[in-house]
Image 1: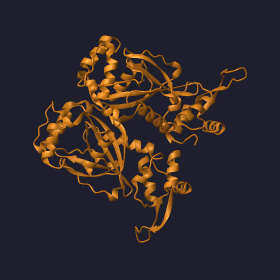
Image 2: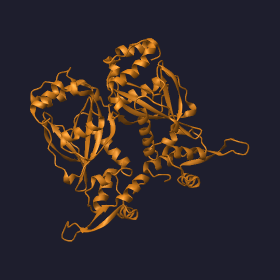
Image 3: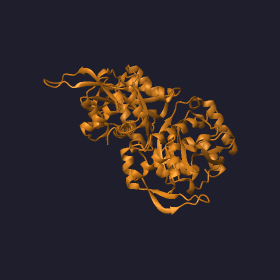
Length: 262
Length: 262
């Protein structure tokens, strides 16, 4: 929704084209400077932030909806995107007045009043998807109602609307349970990385510390990464070697699901 | 819905009390005679079978809805029940005419016609939950519209309505990815079991064969199970010892997520 007119049309007639009671919210993970980060947006009229999200078209598959919503809200396409949980337990999701007030403030920007009987005030369950993106190659042009956007460190998440804290927490627990089964490390790291970078990524996702030497030894013994003939200069006397994944060994390890470290 | 009247009332007025466009389907797993099984029901008017399922009340949390639906359809309560995926991609879920025809045949039993504009003909996404039950202690009294019900071996699933085959397949893949992280073995096995029983269960869930001696050795080395001073007589000269889980060691192993076998 690029223009004020499109946004106002959506509020007025969206229920004809979109399913009520169901939305999609996207937890977009990136990794930079040894920090796991999440992409957040701030809508007009609110100090609290939100996950990028939207509604499902009546004639569109759920997977198509998730990809379209992520692309519309963030211009992100062609990334690792996966459904992880549907949220319908939080009191905020059962409270129509709260839902109405939140939307009313957002749509004030395009002079649309969202009343108690408006379709956007209905109780809405949200289907959570997480996306893994390469922080370094991402260019984002967000849509009309978004006043501000940016990356937020996972351990310093700002105040959020609705139950978005719970959605992020569940997404993180999902990454944690899947990191030895799905190519999560591969999709969060740049193509070439240092050993301290991959070590810090696994620690950030798993929320614990691993002995540096044991972790590296296991990575190299299993042949998951290989050293490149290339170094990165990060200080006067510090130029660590760069590594890349050995995709054959990496996928074999994911299939077996064996932890790299405890 | 125990009576014909209650069932007819639900068809007529259900949209006032339940959310449209959203249902819950339950994949109930049991384990007996070295076979992983799923509980299926057959509704009036259909030769194809279904997963037990239902709709979410407008003022009820999603978790409460899942527990209530499982209890209403099967009398199963107090079991391991967990959401695993929401289904909205299958062409059958986008086809209103197919949805209408399926419901029309079911509700013919209570003389209710489901037309094209009936709320039960709407496109409906389904939230999948899986339940793990002790096959041996289960007593089931299913509700009014169900003509037949029973357990079906996982490798001999009967023809099913809607996308229920896909739901079962995804549930099984979920068990497979979670068996080393969640108490899946514990919830499927009886309190006392033989080593061949636990071995066959892990093979059935993971869909591969494990060397018998290595598997047992790992179980015992990790202290996951302990031998009881009790044997089961299964033949003239065969009385294998019974075992039980050592819950402390079992939960510690689940926390680490390490596979028992490859």
